[in-house]
Length: 170
Image (tube, rainbow, N blue to C red; front, side, top):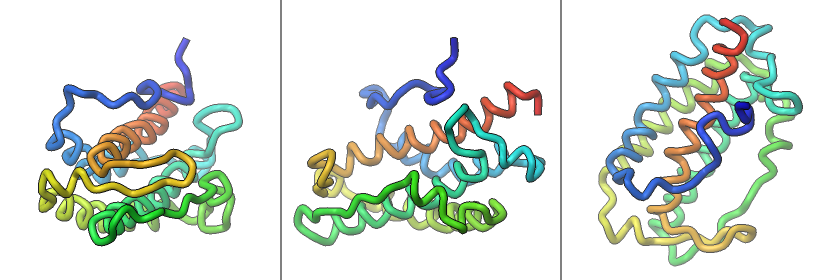
């Protein structure tokens, strides 16, 4: 039986995936996400991908929120020595009023953000990818590992949308 929480499986770093492939996943998210939501009605966007989970609309807005935070964490780690980042309550953010806006708002953010993020990622050196930030809850993160996580995160939430479409025959 399919686990609706993890349509591509829980996060486990793929040691065989190259840095370039991970950057490509970040680069491809805007187009893949836009294709995943193409033609969905408001009613469909307000459907939960699993019982107790977010709506497809909230999922799109979450990607913008989460990836903005990650982008800032990369910039902090590149410009400061072992910065302590500030976590946030993503489930609370998903309930704020802006998570009910049309998804084009967040799709536009993701397009611009990912263009900047990919430019930064492609310019980073091997040494840059070894820089770290401190997460108060999950500990020390190398940028190399954060890149792997966000490549997966991009695929993970896109799959929430595509698997929901498939399940409902949309």
